[in-house]
Length: 405
Image (cartoon, rainbow, N blue to C red; front, side, top):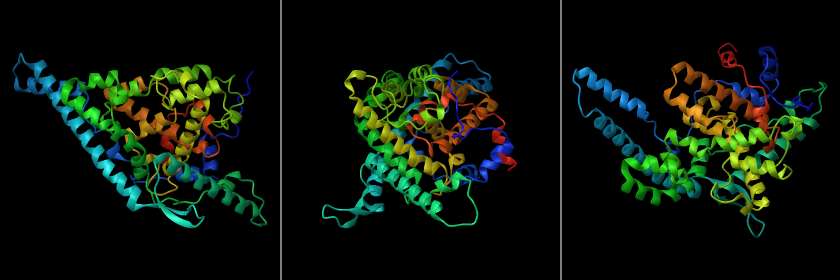
């Protein structure tokens, strides 16, 4: 039988055991803390919330029924109302990308700078923020160095008390970055969105109400601010995630503790292919053979660095709120980015057609999964993203603990 050791991983268990863990871990305390701050959200980089097609059609039918008349133009009125919503939706999506691009330039060139950088002469200087990937790598390095410094400091501190709490040695300082998560995500999402705007604006002008059909067929042309919920399954293809879950099993990844520590450079190449596909780090239109393995591994490493920084924000350690402050769109995206959604089609269906109880249960489930992922990734590596589906699912009653603790 495969070795399923998970002794080094955080798993949801009994409330008493969790309370004990909570008292010893800085990151668990910060994650669990109630917060009303919302700067973890970057609303202008995500689509505008609009009623679903089904809701719009139902509302028009109710309005007509309330008038006590039967119009032969019901279908036409419903279609017109839906088209009107779509035009407003896409117009807003395109305009905010232009606004975001202006904000991005302001942030990169004037608002913030990287401090204590060495120039070519070896002199310390402050420089403007680089492109997103180098920026995220630099921020991840800051977190790593801070972690090492604190670990060394804790280990060398003389004390009469014998420390058995390993979490104390993995403390990171709070408030390391002036950049908020909202700004961090704006820097990440805007460049690709801005590059898509010229072509997308032309397509909207030509196809009008048929634009959703075009976006469904070619989702890659759609800026993130113009993605309808119905298109999410096309962007985050459930098939790639299913292939990963079927290939990376308890037998092929055992022991799980060890596999969670796999880096982008020692993970089996077959698993690298599966994980990069599930995380959208390669194009489905380019044959896998066209990608050098060094490129895929480098992309995985950069992605891990990005998640390291994003987890620091979502843990609440940088201030500005934690994962509990995420709105639904941000929560879903954060879970998709960490390979925590098993069936995106089912999720979209629940969010659009489910009852209030079903929607609430789904949101709580995503929050618990995200909590566990952030808690574990601090001490794991990119391999953890490939085995999350093998860990026990959190009990639905865990969310209620927050009201009693």
